Length: 414
Image (cartoon, rainbow, N blue to C red; front, side, top):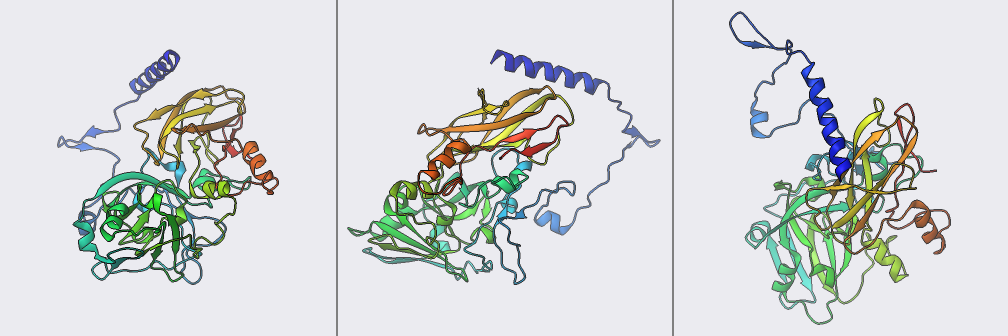
C-alpha cells in the first residue's frame, strides 16, 4: 500500500510541474476587458432545453455484434454491443446500453396507457395491472448488470467492445416480482413461472419460483427515467445475475406453472446436465481490463492507471487481481466505490510501464469464493463435457491483452 501511495504522489508531483510550465496566454482580455479564447459556444435551443445531448467531441457508439447487421435490410435489430473501452464508473448510459433481441426483432412501439401486465396460471387471484397501478405499488431501485450468453471472446476479436460489449449495468426501478406474485397468491406446486414479452417473434422464458420470489424486478425505470424502447419500454423483467435472455423485455404476461416449459427463448439454452444448466443461467465471476485494451495505443513508457470492470451473478465482487506478466504473478487491484451485488464494479491498478512487451490480465473473485478461470481452465472444463478445445455456455474466462513495445495493444488469445 505504501508503494502505491508513493507512486501516486510522485505522479501528481510530475503533473503539477507540467501544469506550471503551461502558458496561460491562450485566454486573454480584449480592449473591452472581456475574456477571449478559441472556444466556440453551443447556442441554446428548445431541443437542448427539453432533453440535453452530449458534446459533439464525444463519439462513443454501439456496434453490431455477432456478425449480423443491425438494423438489417428489413429494419430488424439484432445484437448491439456497448463501448466498454470508453466507459467510466460503472453505470452504462441508457443510450449506450447493449441490446439483444430474440433472433432479431422490430422494437415494439407501445402506448403505456394501453399496456397491461397479466399474472395468471396457478394462482388464487389472477390479476391484470395497468402501468399506473404498477407505479402506485411499493418500488425498489437497484443497480444490476445484464449480460448476453453471446458475450464471448475469441482470437478474431480486436477490441473489448467486440469481446465483452454484450454486457451493461444500469440503475433499475420497479416493483419486486414477489410483491405481485404474493398479491396473486401462488398455489401449491406452482414451482415455475413463464414470462412473456411483446415481440414479433414471441419472447418468453422459464424461471424457477425460488428466483422469481427472491430478487426479480418488474422494471419501468432505468437510470432515472423511463426504460428505453430498445430495453423493453414500458415494462421489462430483470432477473439479477442470470443470463440476459431471461430478462424478458416488453413484458405483458407472467404465468405460474408446475414445471419447466421449453419456450422459444429457452431452446438452445437448455442443458440436460444440472451443473451445466446452472452455469448457463447464472453468470460466473468475470472481469476485463478496459484500459489499456485491444485497439488502444499507449503514447510511451511511464505511469498508467489500469482500469476495468468486474461482475458476478453470484453476488458482489470481493476481489480483483491484475497481472502484467501474463499470469506469472498477481497483485490486488483497488475496488473503486461500493461493490454492489450483481452489478459492474470498477477496479484500478497503478502501473509503471517500462516500455517492454507484456501481457495484462485481470481475475475476479466473488463473495461466494468463486474465482474467474483462465482460458486454459475453461477449455479443460468443457473438454471434459465433450466440447474439445472450445468454451461453451457462459464464457467467463480471463481475457489477455498484449502490449507491444510500440505501445499498441492487441487481443492475446492464441
